[in-house]
Length: 492
Image (cartoon, rainbow, N blue to C red; front, side, top):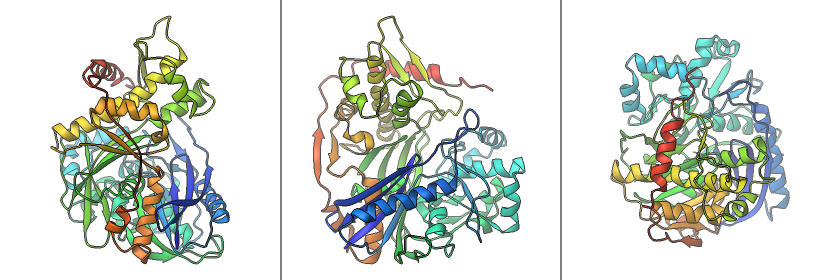
């Protein structure tokens, strides 16, 4: 038996066909356009996401040894999507999680004294990152599509909800707790949509999707709309929670870091939410039907996107994979420090007004030094989050599991181990986001019987041990000085 996993990311959609031993036996991928209509604004055309989904799935299924028995879905989180309930067409572009346009909404609500209450209910903070602030912005702007929401014609959701509506031919409007807990509209302890929060952000509760478990059949694909397939849709999770599941982090204290467009460090905290006052987020990891499992998360907005910027914005490399060789051609960054706050700063600093900063430039600085500084920045950002987890939340992180595209970069993994002062372990299959979605769907349809069986599929590729003395060599302190200079730059 095999399971089809759809991983709808920020820049493209990956489709994986996963076998019972956890191996990926076929894959497909299709990028879709990124829209930047104004500085700080990031948008997607929902139809582009759906078209990319069909293309990636078609490619993967053509290479698969046999027909899958179920579909699992994982997705970029927090992105706000609106679509017509009848036609399934989107009346406007989606507002992406990286988008900063709702900073004014956050400032107004904070000045009204709501931030502590929002954090208490959601485990999150007031930041443009989250879906509720984007929807509040649409309502306040009088966006024409919002009239359809208020009239009940237009559905509101995140990317998972939108794609499930498309997969099922409009039969289902659902989301799971891992995605709902990222919206600022979900009461993380009560386990449901909050009337108080919906009122605060001006979102009609009736427009929101039905809450369903992360694992178990929630609908069936429509053969007429989805490649002729009639399959159960049986797994749903936000991308970072899916990666935690795919890394077999099923016990409290187990942690992972996914290197993607941004980087996200999650640690399983079990059946009780752990509050953080120092920049970490409390979130639902998954709900297998017996109640939520929680996680503590550090969300870093720009890591892999910084490498893309070196490639597409500056033309310093021709392909993202070239950065390892270029950065490895110099022994250090030559004093160069790059703070990739290209869309503000996430955890633990949380400054939407921060902007990208490069300091320490001299006549001797080269593109190799900037490439090295970029990889070092990723390692520093992850260290900042892990340090808070250990010091403020009391969570032990004896080792870190890594995945995502940049996890294949040996230099980055070694820099990460050096900065953490702890081992970094990389699995043989680094596409753990999609694998996690497959695991959830397969667990919900009997392909696998338990998380114990799933855990036995995890296999080590390489373990990176920290070099002695590097963690305390002063470079991290220099990094923190550069971060202070990046903060508060955009005052407009």
